[in-house]
Image 1 (cartoon, helix red, strand yellow):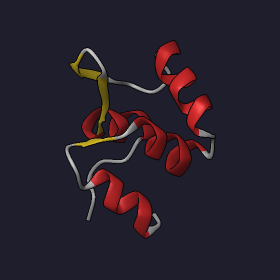
Image 2 (cartoon, rainbow, N blue to C red):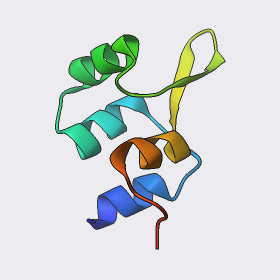
Image 3 (cartoon, one colour):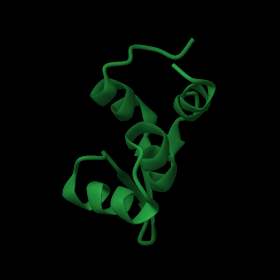
Length: 67
């Protein structure tokens, strides 16, 4: 696991563009499209703010814990 992914998964949530770029290698627009489709798990913090819970992301990627 690279350092950028470790740093991303060490936080409770991450931005949709960061998850798309680091985990899936896609652009910002593609990352938001994946989030809208439900491929990237998200939580809504306010009407304009969605974040990716890293616990759900770790489960989706099959990663137990960040060391």
